[in-house]
Length: 238
Image 1 (spheres, rainbow, N blue to C red):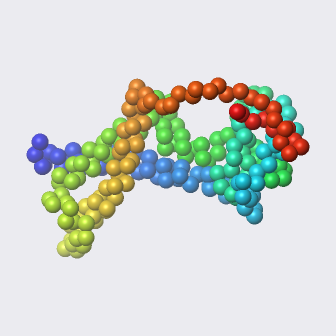
Image 2 (cartoon, rainbow, N blue to C red):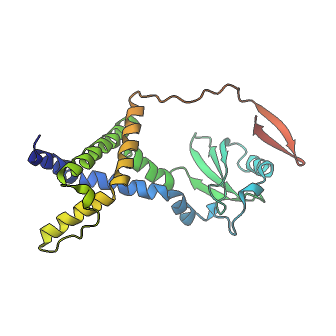
Image 3 (tube, rainbow, N blue to C red):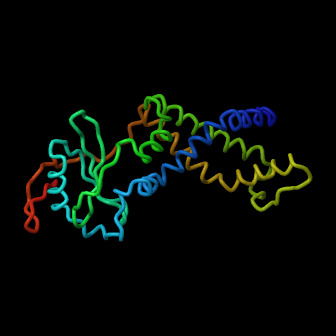
C-alpha cells in the first residue's frame, strides 16, 4: 500500500465517520459528568452542606426506606458517589418499573424521587450502544474504536518524522496549509487519548463477542443476616 492509498483510507475513516465519532466522543464526555448533571437538575440528590460518607447511618436509612412506599421492592441501596450527594435507593413498583429514591445520609430523611431514565442513564446508553439493542450498538461503537486505531497508526505513517513535529508552529501561508498543520499538531498531541479510546473500545467489542476475560471466583457464599447495630436493626451481607 503506497502513501496515496493510505491517505485515502485515512481520510475515509476520518471524514465519512466524523459525525458518528464526534457523537460517541461528546456523549462519552457528558457521561463522565452525568452524575453531576443529575445533581444539578434534581434537588432531591443534593446534600448541603456536604456530609462525610463515614457518617452514613445505614440502619436508620434502611428503616426509612421500608417505611416509604412499603409495597415497592428494594432493588439496592447505594452509597453517595460524593459527600454532597444523597443516598440513592433503586426501587421497583407494582408495574415492575424501576425508579430512584433519595435519603439524607445522616438523618435518613426522605428527600424525593427520580425517574429511572435520568441524565446519567441517557448519556451512558447513548455512548455505549447508541440506544440500540446492546449487541448491535456495542458492536458499532467497538468497530469505531478499531477504525480510530487505524486512523491513529496511519496518521503516524503519513507524517514524516512525526516525533519532531510536536512543537512545530502551524504555517500561515494559506488557509488550507494552516488547517492541515493544525490537524497534524492536534492529532499528535491527542494521540495518547486516542490510543486509550481505541484500546477500550476494542476491548469491549472483543468481550461482547466471546473474549470472556477471567475474574476471581467467589469462594464464600453470600448470606443475609440480621445484626443489631447501635440500637437499630440493619440488613447487612456477610
